[in-house]
Image 1 (cartoon, rainbow, N blue to C red):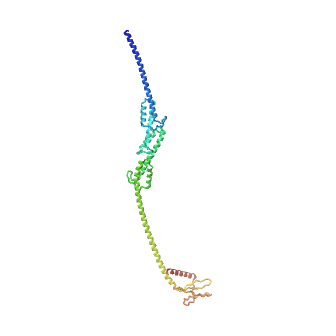
Image 2: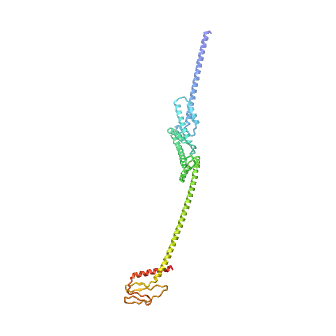
Length: 358
């Protein structure tokens, strides 16, 4: 074989080897690309699966129960590894929404523990929770309504605590002092006590009751002072009553003595007048229309004497006593009937008074 033939044979062999090698390489490249495509497809499916696990349903309107920050972090990282595409953008949006819902749920629910306001909750925390809640209002309406109930309850309990603290502070001279006002009342105490009793947080409630105990102590002091003042007033009133009673008894006693003295004077005067009356010589007898006549009465003596019979005369002459020792009545004397009767009644009254006095 000539040299030329050998060269041609080598070229043919080299060409065939090159062609065969290129075919194998092409197949290798295609295989690698296919493997990479399969891997990317698997990664996309895995990312979609991780994102879907963050939600309760396929509609993705409610967060899955019990999701954690770790789940969100893994899903986010997996989506970020995907090549840029509309699907990647969509998955990122879903993950971001799930993060906002989770944060809102976490912040709001942290305000309450067993439906009781947590310790040390501040107004800024409530405002922050409200901000998170507003972000999910459109994306998660059901979750929004659920968390709104939590937030409202937390706000109500917070406001109840602040109102009780403010009302309690008003019972002191200064909010940070322990000096209770002098004009504090039982009504104010009862009002604050009712507010504190309604607080659900036991730690806050206990602290407020300890402060309220200072007010209760002050009220007992005021009550004791008022009781002493009342007892003093009652003592003064009793002394005044007894003094008035003694004064009235003295007045009554003086009036009784004066009345007794006047009775003694009247008795003495009646006795003297009766004695003078007994010394009168005669007293006219009232006349009658049927038989006009003159009557006379003998002076009364200590010893009662029988009356002397009188003779009646049909004429208009006056009766004369048979006793010659009796004084003689003038015939020409005419006495008025009414006047005589009045004098007789007066004499009888004075005589009765004199007898009573004796």
